[in-house]
Image 1 (cartoon, rainbow, N blue to C red):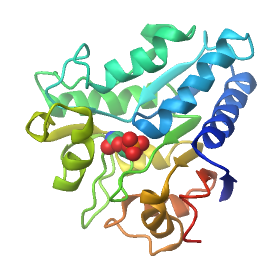
Image 2 (image 1 turned 60 degrees about the horizontal axis):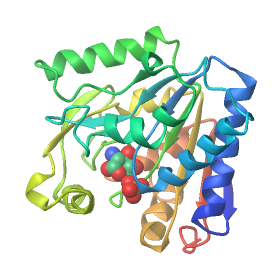
Image 3 (image 1 turned 90 degrees about the vertical axis):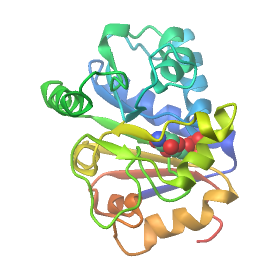
Length: 241
Ligand code: GLP
């Protein structure tokens, strides 16, 4: 595990974007596993600048996103497809057909989970998976539980996650109660993982994730077992170490 301690959110975003862009430069047709949330917004802004400056070319890149809310269409402004389109895909030269987000409106959600898992396989696996961290230790939408869910699956969101994510919706009632998420095995099979964490509010959970017991009660703790994990976190997030 490599831990990169950065000054603040901006510094974290730049360093993480550099790692992602190095991956794309080294393998132009790589498969990037992408994430949503406020942690990664700054990283995507940096990638857009790098792309516009001609420093990184996304034309060969394929992407798979971690998760999507069940019941939100891609054009709903809180869907993760919409987040990705507006915060990254529409502003870089990636081919939109090469981008993948689970379909939260699929008529058969279980079939969609199987399709998505197969898609990751067909793409040849994930070269670099970007992850944020939920306040309860979730990665993707793998919520605390008494087992690690392995593959892409449908999940009931925890009250704490619904509350945390309600800041993006008009009120808490509008937050979907279910999501589709890549599973722990789907994530752990990525060749390399880049976990990005910012802010004092995540300091306690980040300490548990990186140095507590590996337990499904703290889903991110499984990352300790990944052979190629890079953590880019700011001083505030690393303040409990
Ligand atoms: C959501 C996403 C996660 C993300 C988490 C943290 O729940 N499903 O993939 O890591 O939010 O979000 P933020 O970066 O906004 O704190």
